[in-house]
Image (cartoon, rainbow, N blue to C red; front, side, top):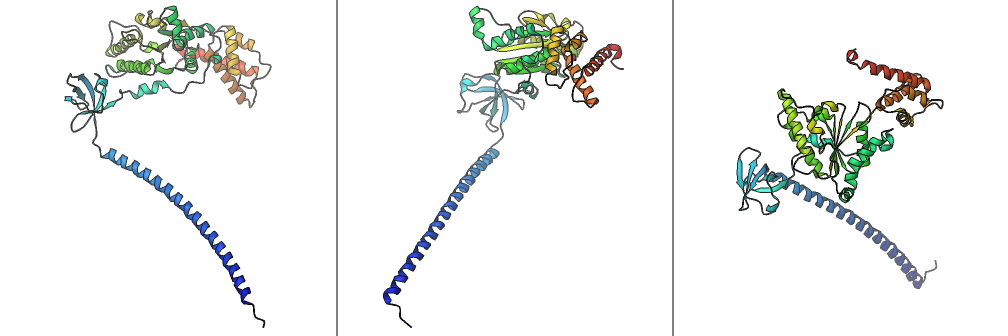
Length: 401
């Protein structure tokens, strides 16, 4: 058997060692990259756990703190102390924490007291009734001026009285007059008073606060007046703002010499409303819109100039307005091309805009009843008859039928 030369064996061994060394180096590099990736993952997890630990420690410290007592400042003393009335009942003369600027503290402010030393430690926001906060409309209604048929003169007056002073107050300063303080919308039910107010809420960028007159009538003495005061206080804080009082006659009717205790409470609420409409304190950029179906029963003090400077009457729609209202409420409907709106307009002479909307809805319901996807003239004819019959049934003799 021939022998392999020693030089050949050494050469082959060196090649194998070199390839083995390279493969082992690549293995170590891969291992190193994997360990670096694992290290980054662990560092990220450590950072997350540290943040969570910090949050839990802060929450634990809050839970360990002693509860605070709410109080109202009655008077600020010359030596820097304050007289407060606590929520528990008694009055205290207390010190003010160094973390609070004493010049910001005023009579009537709500503050928090330390339970042990009774020192003022925090300023608290003014209290707000949950009912008041719910009156603010955060999302504007999907109603614009183009969704209102007719009422061009009424819309122009509303925009001049409500929108223009909020958008361009400098125009009134240049002319040298004060903008109107309020506008009262009157007219039969269904003529578009509330609809115009919703359009104003949609078109303007002001805070819109909607109040129902009956909501201001409360059970306990003084509660209605307090609600009125807080409504206007919130409107001033969120100015520019619009306060819309719907069904104003529920709280603004004639004051009587002989009245029950409930009537007297309504009168107290009315007097607070009169004071807010035209009192010593200026309202700033706060516009008032009132709406009622019965202007004849409103108190004369509510109707005088300076409170409601403009009274806008909403009449029943004329033929041209009724035709426009029909087109607005049928533009999303699948109606037959042979539908003649002039016939519908002539047959709805005494109906309001709300009645016309009900006619369009009833016509669609008649089409669904007939298993049809297109509303025809016959469906509208049936709908007009039904709405007119319903109007006749709402007379006093037919209410309970």
